[in-house]
Structures are given as C-alpha cells and as structure tokens.
Length: 254
Image (cartoon, one colour):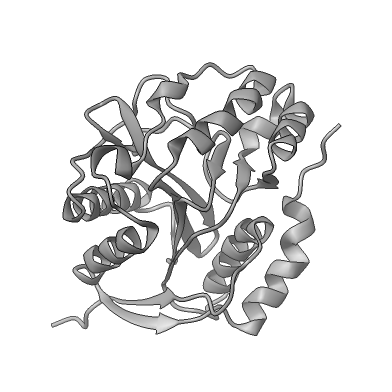
C-alpha cells in the first residue's frame, strides 16, 4: 500500500508585498525542481496588483497598460503562469500549488482538472454553486476557469512548467469584484483586448458573508481530502531567492 500524498501548506508569518508574489512563486518552483523543497501549496491575500502574462508583454500597448494599472493604485508584475492580465486585491485569494515531477509535461491537463474541481467543491462548502468552464468575454480567459451559472467568473488558473516541477496558480475573487473590473477596464483597453466587464464576479455576489478566511479554510479542507497536509512557512532561502528574482518581474511603463 502506497503512503498518502504529502503536501506542505505555507502560512506566511508576515505580510508580503504584492510585487513579491510572482517572484516567490518562481522561487518555490525553482527550489522544488532542484529537490530542495517538497510539494507545496500556498494561499494568501496578496493586496492590489495587476499580474501580466507573456502574451501581454508581446502585444502592443503593454507599457500603457502597466501605466494604467499603476495610476489606479495597483502594483504591476509579470507573473509566473497564465495568459492575460488579471487583478488581485485585498478581497481576493492568490494560490500556488508547486509540484515536483520528473516529467511535468505529463499530467498538465490532469493538474488543471484537479485544481478546478477542487475549487468547485470548496465553493460548494460556502454555499456557492459553480462549474468549470470559460465564460464568453471573461478576463484572462481559460478552459479551466470556475464560474457561476455560466455568467460570472469566480476563479482563474494558469500553469508553468520547468524541467522537474510544475506550478499551478491563480486567483479567487471573494468580494468587491468592482475593484477587479475597474482596474482592468483601462488595462484591457490599452492592450486592445476584447472582454465583457460584467462577467467578473465574486463569491459574495452569490452567497453574502463569505470571507477570504472562510474561503481559504474551505480550499484547504478540500485539499486535505487529497493528501496529508503539513504546515510550513516561507523560509529565508526562498525569500532571498525571491528578492533576487524580483527585478525580472517588474515591468517598465512608458
């Protein structure tokens, strides 16, 4: 009989600046690939930041989009995984699941399915009905988004691979979806990306009273059904590596 899956769950000892979230995710991925840390799950409240993807950087209007985010009071970062710009606030959760694997190309779709279905079950614990699938016109569109009734995006997810590990990360909008919509309107306009702001939703729009704390607990309860969870923390080696990586994730505006 095989031993149960073991996952380390990180609890931040202190608030982490929003601009360090992407470097921390990359540092965890690099350290997992090097065999320095085990499978790790981190879920935090990140603060106000717009995370841009590779396709955003390659397209026209990127410097103007970065400037628009900063004018709205958001940090701007180049994120680890995912496609198009997404906004995080003090009313969202940021999650990252770092998984060592000798050949991470195997299981890409399975990891997406596992994470998205886990979120659907977690939201159900909170009284929020949801399903996996893209809402037409959603921001940062993806097959494995989680939505309510096919009209409100609640969660987005992306995946990044390196030689010996994978990182599955994204956002859950818990409350105040207008903050996400309002900053992304000028950002998407600058990037010349079509989207429908009304597709951006939050858990509290379906079930009032949901909080970031209750959502985090529901997600971890579902994760505990998949594996044995062990508490951990962001150690000095990870934070030092993240600090060195940080300049790579700060975009320049015009």
